[in-house]
Length: 395
Image 1 (tube, rainbow, N blue to C red):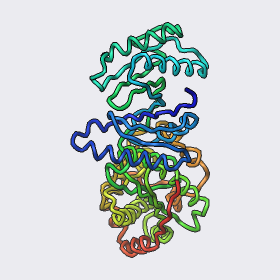
Image 2 (image 1 turned 90 degrees about the horizontal axis):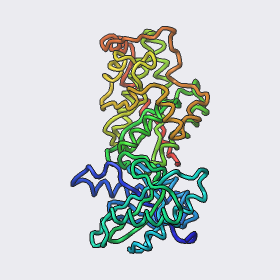
Image 3 (image 1 turned 90 degrees about the vertical axis):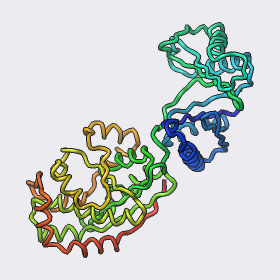
Image 4 (image 1 turned 45 degrees about the vertical axis):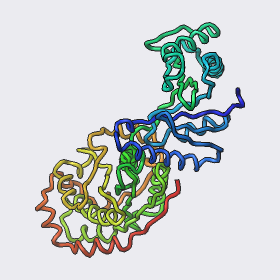
């Protein structure tokens, strides 16, 4: 049995809610799974059926395949399973062998177990309840684990389908959400901090393909800062087919604001100019919205008044998936997705340049529009868009 191929069973998340649109979501998920598998050097096969996706792979590579596929958005959970003949005796013996192998490698013996059976092939002579009872009896008699139907420490799964029947003893949580590509493209304002990569991750979880945009103020922000953002973009790129980072020059904009506008309004004016430039860049890529890592009340520029003032300059909807997160929640998610350690490396943020000691926290739209009359806004935006560099991102 150790040499037998493993069947990785992928369960859909929200896709069952999609009604007549479900086939489109399933195709997207299948494409994303194929792409994830293409990035690891393992011989695999993919098949759809029984409301599941099935990936076959050598038993020795199952752990690597599960680790890769658990990050694919749209997968609610997955299990490394063993195919079985459609015979109750064979199902029982394979379930027993998987349980024994599980017990041999686990540090602490589970206190109880339960068999959960699912019979989608109604031609099979036993009901789901009867399958669970018979397979559970084999495990109980041979291993001696107590049965607990309400809160078991170990759940053994048995599924009997028209094309495949299989058994598993482990259920790994997936990334959940919707397949990337299901909700359309979105421009992401990506800085080198903790928040914006997490915001991008959450937008991907809702099915959005990201087009990240970074503002670089050379020579005040150097190559180390740019390299950091490239690595953060790379962490997000693994979830989608391709990614290109737009690096927009922002030095001239900031110098103009510093020299001609009230210092207290600098941060709000920076952000309004970023919105204008980002909307132009995102619209050119077919994006339907912008996403930012902004949070309500976290810093001076993120009061309700300032956020309203900043968004007034945008020509696309602005999505803020972290708006109501506290910092601890965002940090925890950054750690989980693997961006935290990169985000906390020292870097120069263009928004921290030329910032006054007491920035305005309740800016009014008419106030900032009056300040912007000292700027040639259109020329500054046109020049920044025209000089923007596109950098392909490797995942």
